Image 1: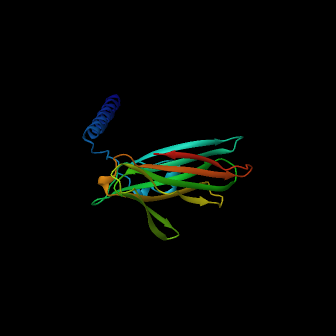
Image 2: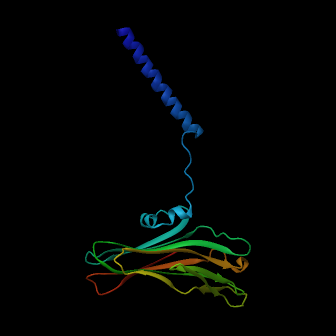
Image 3: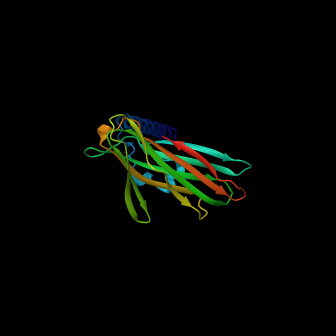
Length: 210
């Protein structure tokens, strides 16, 4: 019996060594552990990921405001594509903005309001793609004809919820063209979050930008 037990123990020891060697080999060769796949815009541009802050390939910024007397927290989020892409003579960015309230107060109104700026010249323009209630259109904002660099701003756009929701968000894209008349790295996206909660006479606001 002791010989059999000794033999069994040896088998267990050999098996454990084999498993350890196999795992080590897999780690070295990267065979057993596949690299994570890139997440597409359609996956992470959704309300769940807005709340979680999952924005893998984007540049982002958030700013929060604490409402006094236990009123909760209001956060302004703004996210934009890290790199501009576009065919031909234009540059395109995807973006998303949101206003998020965290707290136990009843939300009477929550709004996200955004706009973009860029340094342009020679009549170049920023074009914002807007969709509301299944209707889509483009609004463009142009520099003057001068060859000097000018800061061009879009108008302010907004999305408001007054149905008790604790989040208001919007996603779309904008383009700039011609790209030769855009100053590199000059684009900026702003977002102001607003909330009015029960028990307070004022509307609270906070702005984030990238």
